[in-house]
Length: 211
Image (cartoon, rainbow, N blue to C red; front, side, top):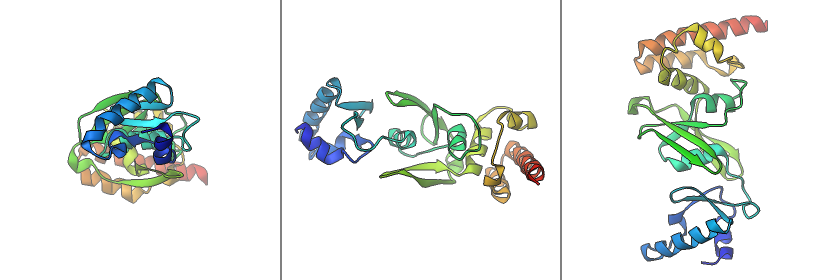
């Protein structure tokens, strides 16, 4: 395969896998060898094993960090502080992309950034949506309510007012109070039940301050 052939196939793709380029198992080894050469030449960037993106100036689409996260570990969705920052619910920039998965936890350092994958039980893996992030880019992201509850679920001793205050939550009108209660109840976790009541208190206080 020539580099021009690669561009014809993936220039519009944010990321691509080795298998996408191989016509057969026999050609897979040749594709891997060629990709290794292009990585060394600075034309292609290897993100993780088998996952690549074109280097600038060859790519037409800059990979969104959330798209990269979904691609690194299939069966995951972006959540916790990463999703909360995306929805404008916390003021800080979050450089590390944190996702949730039912698979083993993982920490993946890539040339485009750090990705952390947190493990949850299968019955807590829900309430996420495929959201548009730009041309040809979509990623699975937790709903605002689930992102906040995922953070509380995965953080020890987080079911207290001080912890929630330290998050400096904003735009609380983005949260659906009924959905917060439904998710907490569905979890069956007393901890999340207590946290949900505190979240409702914060929502009420925020609404009162806005008047």
